[in-house]
Length: 76
Image 1: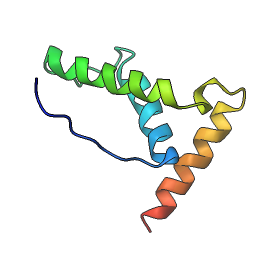
Image 2: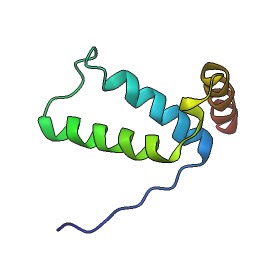
Image 3: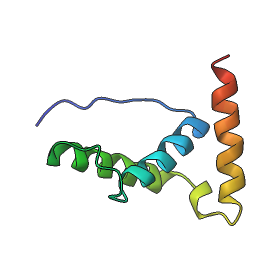
Image 4: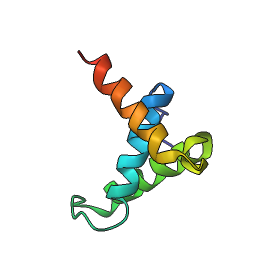
C-alpha cells in the first residue's frame, strides 16, 4: 500500500475546498480526464464531509461566503 500523504487545511480552506469539490463532483463540469482523478476527488469530498459541520447548517451559504472572504483576504 502506498504511504499516506497528509495535507493540513484550516476550517475556512476546508469549507471552500469542499464546496468546490461538490460542484466538480456533480458531473456537470467535464474536468476529469481519468477515472482515478474522479475517485480521488470523491474521496477528498467524502473525507471533508465527515469532519465539517457547516455544510449541514441552515446558514451554510452565509458560512461559505464568510469562509471565502477570509481565505481570499489571507492572500493579500
